Image (cartoon, rainbow, N blue to C red; front, side, top):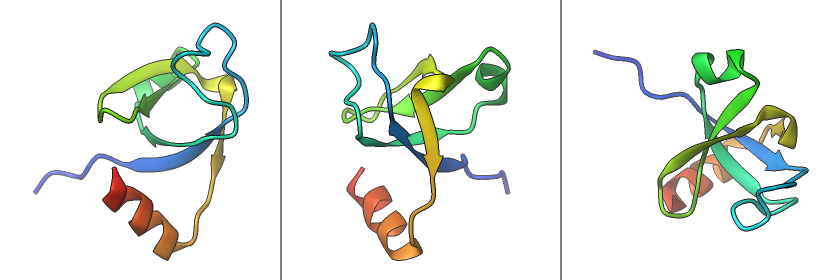
Length: 76
């Protein structure tokens, strides 16, 4: 059985150059992507369910209680 894609939560702190795509202070679901991380990027899932690369420095990882984490993932 293959490993599921590892998702984690980040909050957007900056959106310079991406104001149409990213909202400051918004919580996003991010996918672990070691290749992108090596290049200083993070893979973010948007409202459409698609994922895009953005500068890693725009975000900070956050921890959510399990009940909220499940609710957020179920809503995506």
